[in-house]
Image (cartoon, rainbow, N blue to C red):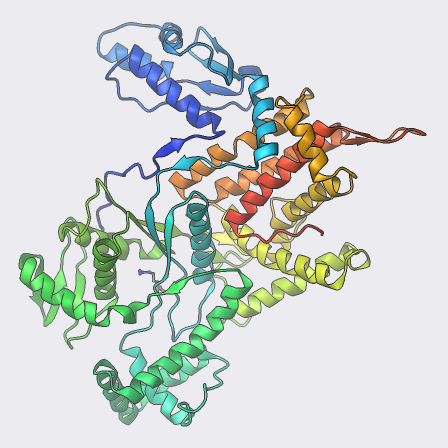
Length: 607
Ligand code: ARG
């Protein structure tokens, strides 16, 4: 156990400059202003959401009820229905996107969108492409993946890698300045035994990179010797001392071990299209020395000696941080303190995000509390936060392991995915209609896309069960389903016989697309919600919300496609192309493609 304080105040880190097509964002702004005008100083959260039932409009505001209750507590008696009427009276009239607001006696305010507005927006998306909401630029550091060198990257790191990359992609999409940082565990006393073991096992390591197929096993071997062999143990300690004093050959040995590990990790990153920069624990070697000096000089009250260790109790923390061990060495706490200081004061980031498993929350919150005590950042300006996630479980709902109980190697896992994806495509008879290259592209998109999407589509904070069967099911909320939907939509446009230029000309001549069928309008409204979705995920950093969005979009597209002819073929007559529907297809494909980019899923035009 133990507790650390959470940063109480959360800075609004997304300052919206232009809502773009975000209807929810614009509605919220309108209603907030109207409520503040009608009932100043109440300070209640706005309740405004989409309605599941079209009978109640497209959106519904239910703020009148809590407002009436609050007024009552101050002695003012007003029925919710009357409160709602007063809010309505303060809403500006003739807002382009609102058709009407129906106020019910119980206080519900049902908001109906204007159809022409929707038709106009879709026409614009078709002519100008997808535009995202504009938000004020921020400098963000995302610490993700961050495996440890000697031990192999495991599924926990895979989750961090997938979630962290997607968060970076989202930030990049809205124009933030993003630092993608791999805080790899490449420093510490365990390197002594690894180096000593390297000398014995691969004496010619200076001449060629040793072929250590299994770093995990190498680690275990050296650990065993360390625990059983006193002479070896002594040599290992000597190696640590030599490494810390930067003795050339020992540094080379250390580098060799890091290179072997990084080479392996890079294969995983390449498969998953991950870009990341190494700024590992070793980067802070000298900075940790300076840090201790700095604290002793500037904040001596914050640290104290206990049993030879130097410890620190950040405000409200019940477990101390160990800043210097009794043997003089540094710890995981020390490197994280040095990293926090560096990120806030040298890199000068606005937000500093750690995508790390939920089990490390206490450690991270204690580091953040220390950073606040040491005045490295200001919670009114900066945001430093742990983006945690749950465990990856096997289908038996226990910790994910191989059948023999070993940690699953990530490359084995990904190859298994490729094998399964190949089978899946075969089963569908795709090799008959696709070239070898197309098939390979589809196979990899399915294999890696499904692993990523399965992770992202589950609520981040919960544990999730890893199941190839489920993630490759083409009827569920999976990457396969979406990749098929996407390819299908692209092929509708491609095989329509209409050129891009023809479609562009049609759209420019029809600034208000004639969308009349209910299925067309439903699809159109969902398309306009992309901006809402992006703003929501920017705030929550919960990517399953984007997965839900794009899945629903694909589903609504299927409904539309079942009910409406895009190309109508009648016997003996030339086919009729419904241009406005073709435009709807095009916008849908582009919105899905935008989501794929953020989710890190490779799109393929043919499946
Ligand atoms: N290397 C650590 C691990 O594998 C994760 C590091 C996360 N980042 C950090 N700044 N502590 O558990």
